[in-house]
Picture 1 (spheres, rainbow, N blue to C red):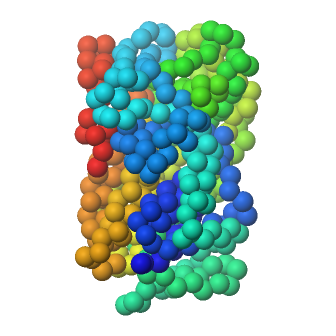
Picture 2 (cartoon, rainbow, N blue to C red):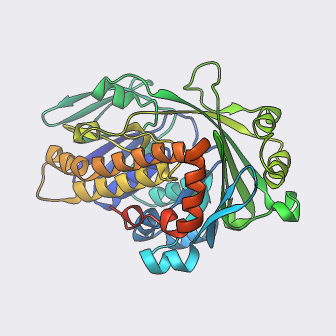
Length: 390
């Protein structure tokens, strides 16, 4: 039985803890925050990810807190015209074996945490930040800011965009700013006028901006994300800021009345300055020796393919499978994990970057996008290479 040390207790870290524990490993997780909390933001989970969660026995728990939208609609942000529609719901279930889900990040994290806490072979440490590690022939030594040293067979860096584990492993500098700002809000549907309530996913595409809205918490709440071009001041690692609603409203001044009505109906927003790294260039960026990277620590991506959390969960599933093998020593198991994951993650990263250019297009490119969407909407919006899973 291998012992797995995990740095980071977000969605990726929790998923890794659950997958490795289910594979028979002893797991010790280190989270720098004093208590677990997730900010008010939603995430989308494609059938490729929902299938993994169902395989972990979380189908009922997921059904109790998620929303299951029946359609994805794309609209022009300036005219309000419908550009394309993709059927979800029963169509996605029949096509891929699992549904398309939208969920509050806090609900997703709580669901994973509850599952991890049911595993007798997992220990969780809070207020304990990983500062450095050492690799040896027979293991890894982990150091935390409270002076502890812990021995394990494997270290998993699931410590996010600004990962300390990555920095020591790869020495590749900091992520870079995209020049895009994400305004996020969560609002109870009953607090909105009836015309603004929605149980579907809607993506509004406009010049140098786009807005995505979808239901969460069984459809009782609406998650709204507005992304515009711009930059913030201060330390980019302090990525969650209170936002000035008036600034967002000014950025949306040229959009259609229905979209402006939605933006004006929401008073409280949080602001993220989006930062990324280039798409992965090799397996060495996913694992080296006895150290593996997972989720944003390995492959941070812009949210324009709605797969950031999904790729972390897929990583965790693959890592658990690799460590469950009785035929491979730990370094070989991690190389197998890296070889299986890095190209798919790189493809998703590149696809998300490309979507950002398409979503925010101007001029002839925008005209061509809209024409293609009207002609081939469902074919363009469906992604079998992604939704069929790794």
